[in-house]
Length: 231
Image (tube, rainbow, N blue to C red):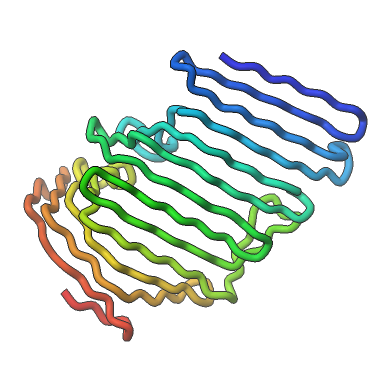
């Protein structure tokens, strides 16, 4: 069930929305739009409490679920926009396998987009960090600055890969294994990628209709600073 309320005083429009599920999980959203009939400026916030989440429609929605708590906010959209997200994904489930929780913190401070994800499983964990220069201003969405470097990093310890099935379901029917990794990447000029670090896979498992089933896959790859790979 849910409600939507709104008001308009010829200068500012206010919209409030509240959605509650049968299990008392909720989503509250508020929007304020100044001069909606002219050079409008909008601010938006959304707060989620134990809200059920499925993977987006382009993914295999039956394979990945979670409960989400936290807040999303965008201020001064269409003028000098800023944005932030602070979300917690609990009870991440991939076809009945509980994969723990993940914490996402992301934002745009006026010159940089940044995101940090921490995944905590029963016997594994991982951290992913990303940062890129961008412009937002009066644009509807941020635009990346291809002239400035973007950085990405990933560190994983005994991370279970079951959740990856939702992203590759068109190719693989089953994906699993344990990942250990310490990888850093830099993207320059919008497309030149430099990667260094290493990643290893233990207890790997792949199942595909095209080549059958592979068990107990193990391997390690090291990315050298000169761009070469060592297996």
